[in-house]
Length: 426
Image (cartoon, rainbow, N blue to C red):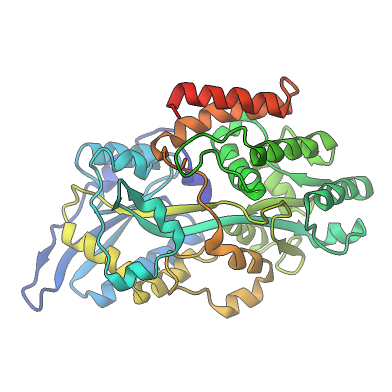
């Protein structure tokens, strides 16, 4: 699932040589049109379902620019971050790169490895709020390639067996439904990551699904830590209630519980739209009819958003092509070309709409689309974006201490607040 690659991955250099080849771009002298070979790197090009669709989407640029050849470079997700970081540090690599998969705009931009992106005023007006994640020190270095947020997915058949007639709309009804499903069907009512052996992805899930859904954030707009604020305490207190209830599958990794949900053995989980699409693809148990979608039933009724960005290599051989491609991609024509490649995820401007036929045949996605652009950015720390990755390493052991009764939620968060200030300042 493509969003699993957003966070730091295992380091190998298996694809280093893949990024080095490109043909210098030159003007053909006719109307200033560009020609040459443009290279674009992304782990998604290797995905069996998404890859061919995405490849076709970006190749649409060739139709508008007949003298240009687009070369897509697929790099395995578990080595993408290391590959891109190594290539760019050596002043090599692709012309255009997807930023994610273990590499961060807040590492690359300060190191002067990305080129500033200039958009037309018309394109700028259509940008969705998640594009703020492409800014560093007042300069744009990235635009949204695709973005996602999470919502509640549930098994309608298990709900029916448990006598539940509608998805929960509050934490109280969520916990009650979770316990009812376990009691009446024997299957777990809810699953979520909950262990440090999935620390980076657990940080993402917990921050998006619990902290943001309770109206919290790790820092405020001034960059001051708010780890022990009331919303954060409420999120951890209620997560622990579910964890301790017996209705949640604990001690399981996503590689175990996601297939269980897909097989119809789990009542509810909170996941992204891309995961939901995967669960129902060619599935005879969990289908677009038997799986439902609903807003997260916590106080804020939304998750945080996770955006995959697109950037330009400052040392790209084909700067002119790279800049032109990004501008084209953010235009209405480019966005409409991109949509079929990233479905069911959403694009980075208001000019790109998911086809109604797709929405009609995947009714469970409606809550995702309704929430869409309003989902706040909380994964990167406000005022301290460069500290986001080391912060995730700091905070999750404190969350685990609360779950394991080594500290109360309040004690764990106060200690985490003090540790974060000591390490990163406030």
